[in-house]
Every structure is written in structure tokens, then in C-alpha cells.
Amino acid sequence: MLKTTSKKMIPMLILRILWRHADQEHMISMEVICDRLEEEFESEKGMTRAALRKLVSANIQQLNLFFHETEWNMDGEKDLQICEKTIANPDQSGGYIKVYCLNSRLFSDTEIRLLHDSILFSPGVDNGCAKRLLDKLKRCASKYFGSLFEYVKYRETFKRTQNLHIFHYLMKIGKAIKNMNKVSFQYRKNGKLADKIYTVSPYYLVINGGWYYLICNMEGKETLSHYRIDRMEQVVTHQYEKGRCMESLDCIGKFFELSQYMEEHPRMSYEKTVSATLMVAENLVEEVELEFRTTSKMKVQENLFRIRIVSTKTAICNWIINLTEYIQIETTSDPSIIELLCYRAKCIIELYQKKQKK
Figure 1 (spheres, helix red, strand yellow):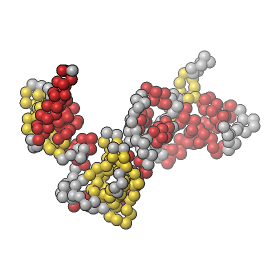
Figure 2 (cartoon, rainbow, N blue to C red; figure 1 turned 180 degrees about the horizontal axis):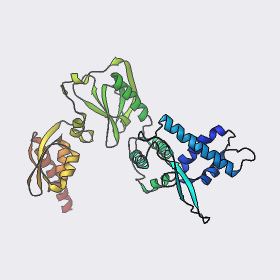
Figure 3 (tube, rainbow, N blue to C red; figure 1 turned 180 degrees about the vertical axis):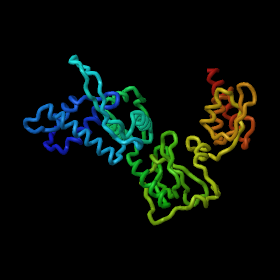
């Protein structure tokens, strides 16, 4: 490690030592700071440990004065300060010593943990990018925090995007949305890149199931479409070509609720939405409300609720098929849901009756 001979660097070295080697649960003593400082600071010939302690103490005071006068804060709430605390000397020599740490950081340990896990379990972030982001996050915490990551595990086969340009595309599309410019791209379906060039007016970037999607209007259509960003290739923004205003679409009208659109398109399905009134067992009410957009809910008897939802036909049928003994359709705006359920039930019965005979 290169050492510095400039005393002007000492305040920065002290901050780096406290940032890396201390937190509020692991405050470090003046002796530890001096030991670390000697590794990086080529002290003047003849400087004693007592002189170095005095130099460190003076620099801590100056740093705290600077933080106070400039109202410098890291977390947006309280001014940054180097905390000092007097504790019993843990050594056998007895007496008391002073220990130090920073009172705040850019992110708290809880926030770092949340961000860390969000990246770790985001399929829309490729492996290389995830590793770089996680390494940067760990540098925002003290060395003691890194050990806490060991207890979070995920499947080695966890599927991530292979698209290394995803964040570049997100930036380009985000700027196009801001400037109301059109965007064009090629799209990968079933693993194959289509020759077709998609040209769209972009409106929103959203996340669903860990994947990034673009909500937009395909050129020549009156409806909204959505496309997964990691399946796009050759994204181009048309700097001098304005996109279509969202309010001019026949399917929108005066009002558009993004949250409603997301709830009505579970897993970003392209199907038309329908409404249905379900009779739901009490133990599944919370799951139904999480999965679907709920417009009304009423308890009709002990352990039974009537819930009106809006979703796609396929999404509703999948739930009914899997949980027939707990959920039933009472009424629906699309009777073909009942026909689809009967068809699926018939297929299941025929398939497994054949297997039983074998």
C-alpha cells in the first residue's frame, strides 16, 4: 500500500478508517485509529504515539466542526458527526478509553440489506451487473456488515436475463418517454429474434415479477401493448419523431390508472380483461386480493366471502382449476370462462382416467 507524507490527507484517512472499520456496534479506539493511520501515513521522523493521538484528536474535532457548519448529512436527516464515547478499557490495564464511529451513513444496514436482496433476486439484472452492484453496496457498509449476507441464499439455477444491454436500453427508453419520442426495436419471442421492427410510442417503464416492461402503443393500433425490456434488441430512439399522445388512444379516454392496468394484467398478460364475482373461502381472501384487482368484498357467511375481481380469463381460470374446493365463480361478465373451465376439467378427467386404466 502506498503511503502519504502529507498531513492534509489525514482527515480523509480518518474518515476512511471509520467508514470501513467501525459502526455503532463496533466502535474503535484511538489506538486502533492510530495503528491504521500508521499503515497509510508516513509520519514525520520523530513523531511519537502521543503526538499522533493529539493529531488525530485535533482532526476529528475539525471534521466535526466542518460537518456542523456545512450541515453535511449522509442520510438526509441528521448531520454527519464522528461520535465519541467513553467506555471501560477491555484490556487488563483497567481505566477508561474513548471509542469512535460515524453516526450515520449513506444507507443504514437495513436499507443495504433491502437493496442487496432486491438485486440478488431480480431476474431482470444480468449476473455481471448484479455482482458489480452488490460489490458497490457492500462498500457502503462497514466490514462487519458483509458477514450478514452469508445467511441469504438463492438457487444456483436462478434464471437471470442474458441481455447485457438492459440498463442501457432502460436509459434510452426513459429519455424517449421524457421527450415523447418514438422508439423502435427488434423483439425476441420463444428465444428467437424476430426480423420485424417494432415502432412504438413509449409511456411507462414498469416492473412485474422482477422483469422490466415497457407499456406503449404500437404504431397503427388503438390499444396499449407491453414488452419485456430484456427481450429487446437494437433499441433506437427517434429523436426527431414525436410519439402519439396516450390520451388520444380509443382505449384510454380521459383517465388512465397505471396501478389498475397492472392489476388487470397479471404477469403482464395480453388478454382482454373481464370481471367475475367469486365465492372465496376466508383462508384465501388475502391471496385473492394480492393476485387480482378487487372492486368489492363482502362477508356472506362464516368463513365465506363474496369478492368481485377484474382480471384476464386465463388468470381467473387458472386459480379456479387449482383451488376449486375453495373458490367458485358466482357470476361473470364473460360466460366463456365457464365453458373454458368445463373444457379444462374434461381434459384433466380424460387424461388421468386413461392413466388409471394403464
